[in-house]
Picture 1 (cartoon, rainbow, N blue to C red):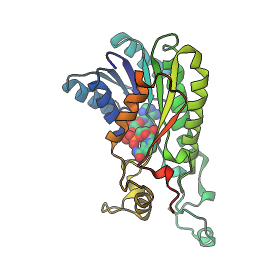
Picture 2 (cartoon, helix red, strand yellow):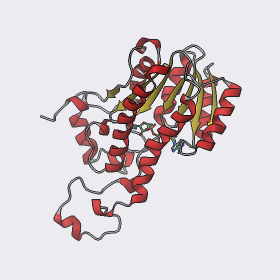
Picture 3 (cartoon, rainbow, N blue to C red):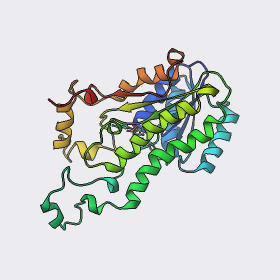
Length: 276
Ligand code: NAD
């Protein structure tokens, strides 16, 4: 990782921060991009406090203009990008149904906060698709261009467990992450002749802000969904952000130089378990 320039989108988030700190410890120079400038700068400060090299930049993964602006700052302060990690992503309540299964009773339910499949609005679905898919496509267009012809460059996308088998209630997020896994394979083939490897992590269940309300109630106790997840995870626990570090370092390093187009589950066995 020595002196490699790593551009990490969504780097101010929970998983991004952990990945950033780990790669910086290995000698990488981090460009932390996030919609929330303060969050990006905070992570960069923490890296610098630990003796590493990092800059925090406000950038919107849905705006090419914003990404190009970030790129010019990165180029002048750190140099051109060697490794792109597309970490920005997430779900939105507007792309989420209230119930796992549709029942006849649901159709008579006219409580305002109840959302059946038929109540999902395209705006919510589009938000989730854009953030995850377009938010991976645009940074790849911007930063992969400067990797072409350079040695040992790679891209790491963040898919999810729900890309293999959709999770209940979140059709937009599941579909968007399935698109990320598919796009990872497409990019791996497309960039194979110009020396850019493309792989993805598929994290299982990590208790973070984006899923806390689905997995725990207001008192912090596990919801029915939270209990089901733990029961379906052979290792019997949620993932810790640190569980992503080893695979990230492997996929971004020399050790995986003949590996491209794979999506690695990091899920405590969730995807291997049929439930019986
Ligand atoms: P998080 O919400 O803590 O981090 C996401 C970061 O992206 C935030 O800092 C947010 O400000 C930033 N962001 C949002 N919109 C942006 C935009 N338009 N431009 C730039 N930055 C933007 O979430 P996390 O749990 O750290 O998730 C990181 C990635 O891992 C996401 O792609 C997520 O879908 C994926 N993932 C998470 C889990 C989990 O259990 N937490 C599981 C599987 C996959």
